[in-house]
Image 1: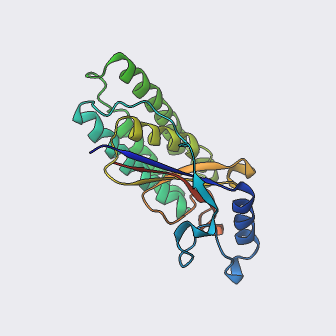
Image 2: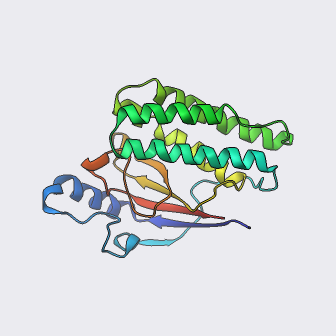
Length: 210
């Protein structure tokens, strides 16, 4: 099935203010950027825009690679969920599984361009997953999430390998207010950089559908 890609541009100042409100008024039920009961993303101002992550189109590759990337996405999502739960032990175990899947990527049947791209992104996945698997502190694990997220999302898009809709989401306050992305299978924001401290802080920046 031909893939379709959608993206939204979010007014940064509004998003930042929404996240700040949640951070300072958690006990009063402050409205979040993407909160149930507000119409999904209705709390953000969004207009059509260019995609956030641009990739080549290698969707005609052999099925074994697509299946392996789909499995990588699934393992990544388990890791992301562990970070949302602020469970360092579970994140460590999930990162080890991500590493195992990434190291088993079948590159042999790829063309030179496909192989170069896949190897580059897989190397990023391996580097980030190794760092996360080697860390016991949740904040140290979170520091490597954005690079992992971008690489996994790039592989899924480039090789048309996601078996589900994926949401590329962003928190402007993550990593000491530098801002950072993550990948989710759910439209609802569940922030892996802060967990329940600012669970709803963030916005969906791009949606990938097959």
